[in-house]
Length: 235
Image (cartoon, rainbow, N blue to C red; front, side):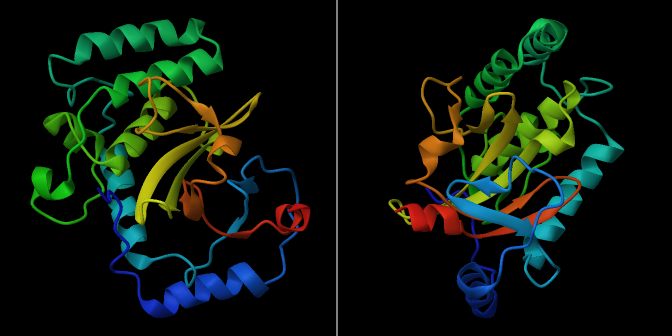
């Protein structure tokens, strides 16, 4: 199932992405960014022309909804009765967890919900769900898993600088997908709803041959990618 649709991306944008990936010079980073090289590609800040308007509108709507009604930070009103006790228990234990244990626990908490398409849940081909949307259906596609983990980790104290929503293409499946990348003391780890067991998290190097990153975002920025020249030379 393709859980992330780019059907609204114009052909010219795809061409611009390919051109920039192959020919534009790398921008020097002022300081080390753990996400600068991700999944075998080099990230650089996206301009308005680089980043799809449709994705920007969806993401802005989700961010605003979470600002207006923080689902997990100030109350648990968006949580169904079946999930509120487990979340409150998790949130209470989180300060005593090391960061890897926290990531596994959050991943397992959200990956337990069944997968469902946006058409099944909302009657539309593509919708970026808010946390309230996700919990009201207790199911979702890859975006639902990814966004929920992003906001959950922020609610549990992770800074935005350590979190990136990454939109990728999976050539083997001819499908687009969304995952959460998290910077840790042990490197960048990928939180994916397709990994098993449900709480499994893996270093980003494990996905080099599986994912082609297209776009990356959080509340503070937007990025796009081109092949990492150092990895290309090493092959």
